[in-house]
Length: 604
Image (cartoon, rainbow, N blue to C red; front, top):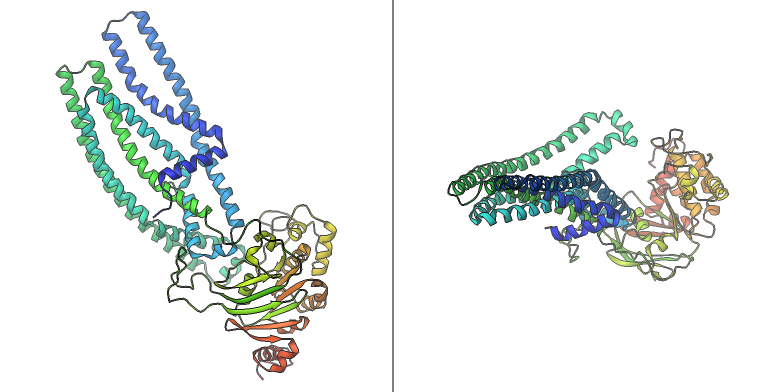
């Protein structure tokens, strides 16, 4: 069931076009009007000519009438041709561009956690599918215009027919009911498969993306994945073809019914019209006009059935678009309490379970089925003092990165609260809170611009500050060098270690009171790692810092260490204190240390 209907989407779409290009909206109105008038002029003109001839009017009157009809026809044709040249290529593109901009802004500004919500992923998948569909949201305005044209033509032509004999209209309407039933069945079938086709398209796009994604290229070749990828791609395309074939069969049934009713409808109407002429109930001019009107009426009726079906389908996609743009955020985007720079962090009974692991959760009611999996974090209580250097350690999957993203405000815990300087982080403006955090995450992105722009995240920057941060991070590169060869021909490639150094320089340039380092040395060689450790005190000077690492030797530089194990904080203290406890931390440290001993194999 879609949230918005055709009328609501019509008002929304026209308002979007009004905002994007008001002149184009004017030409849309003119084009729609002329498309109705041209066929009407076409059926009226022969009757006028025949009536004038049979009435034996003077030559002057006949010429005057013909000139007037010709002038009306020329002006209408000109307006129609000019508007069509503007509407057809531009309306779809202008509206699509408007949506693309707003959709991009939504993806860039929405709550981070919403990008991982299963219902948003499905909704966004359907929205992306409609971008490439002939019946998608981009066709809504042209299809709406088509529907209005057909309704307008039906009204004009129907008025002509009713004026001559209303019985013909009743006969035509009966055929419409039969056609509408088969079209309705076809439309309902397509609406029912929309969710399925959206998910299949998502798999197709992801597989296609993986084929061309540069970081995957080496693995694809080394592990001979070409055959597997092509098979998966072909499998999903076959799924789509099966679904489309079922839809085509429904459409074929509707087409056969339409053809049969056209034969009965038009044949019966023409026989009845001939009877009226022979009986003397209508004149020759009326006969010619009615003959054309009935043929045109059939076209308008078919047009209404087809365009209403297409409009309904397009409206469903339009509703998906609107729901995607209106997907609600939880965090406050403006306003909020003023933020201090002391950067004291406090977590009170914080628990978090990832979406999709909580059973069948209802977004409206918030209720969850009893099939919920074990939470990633459970009842976490932690206070990080201003200026403190905290290390978070634990095995893979222990929840280290989840804890960091909860502190950052990316994730809202299902239970408990996160405080910053004594206030709940939800009380701050989201962007204002984000400005308090500099972070180096494991996944590092690069902008297709200079290294300096990548460090400053802005085209206007302090070059001396950029160079200083690069030096602190150990990145020995020309800050004016371009990155990303797919965009810049003269770009340089950065190694994994250089990317991490660039990310560290980026965090230092921001100079926020809270510094988060998530595995910042994972891609560094031992010498570079040692150099970073030696500068760690300088890098974190005056800041509250949180450091995540699998290499426990690096935790010596921190004031305090917490060990996450089984979704809780199982151990806490300095390096020496945790070694003295002889618990899980000491065991992990001893295992790692054994690999560095001569002849060590990781076993004692």
